[in-house]
Image (cartoon, rainbow, N blue to C red; front, side, top):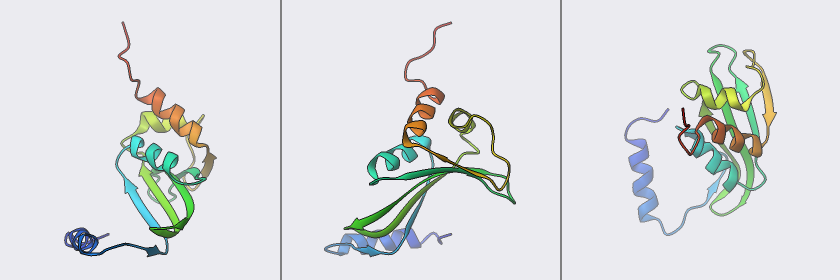
Length: 125
């Protein structure tokens, strides 16, 4: 993980630079399923994967895409830990994954799970 000064330093460097090119892989940790869906619909030809860690047994969903134009030349991976988003996780998969297993999913499945887990209109009694 980063120390508390690292993000600030990166921000300063970005502000004083005329342009930015990243040659290499980029990983992003997300806080919310809506952020994951935004990355999935923005990245070119993304692949999506739900997986469960072997040791911690935590649940994750990630989207990944190869990116070959500025500002990133490499793979971009956006990862969401789903432990605090269990309704989203449960809507995404037919059954929970065993620790150490993974399942390929579609961007459409991400969208449907988000819509089901967080309805836009309140339900009537």
